[in-house]
Length: 167
Image (cartoon, rainbow, N blue to C red; front, side, top):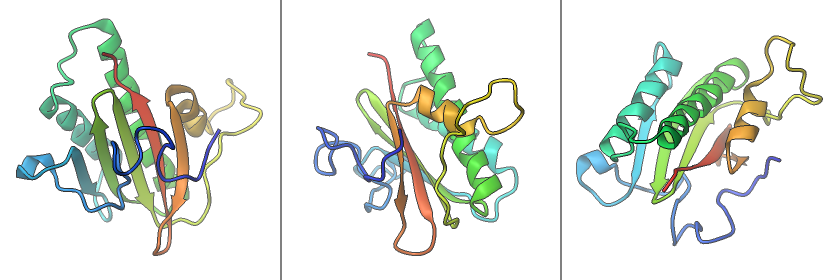
């Protein structure tokens, strides 16, 4: 079920693990501290493949790819699917995504997609597997440890999802 907390209430709190995208984090590519990557998607063409490619490159840079086991390969595909679903949802219902943020911890990846929309995504209930469309948040709910929505100070929201990475 969706929650509205910006981070998990356990050992992943702001000071101990995966921070929210709203925190001022430095990109690992720059050599600065932090385990975060962010890309601006506003006004970009082909945002879903762009977001997937960006995420795939981050997983390579972090040593999560190439996958050495079937579990790791499946996990990487789940991460890419969740990124696709969140970005697509922002395109269809949030006026287009503004930003994608990835935050890694040793066994966790937090994906955040910000958009200017005011609505909150919810899985369609009851879920009807044979019905076209409306499966995105159901997929996110099934694949993720947790997910939620945080309103932004400015207009819009950030939809986040946390996925486990196998040991």
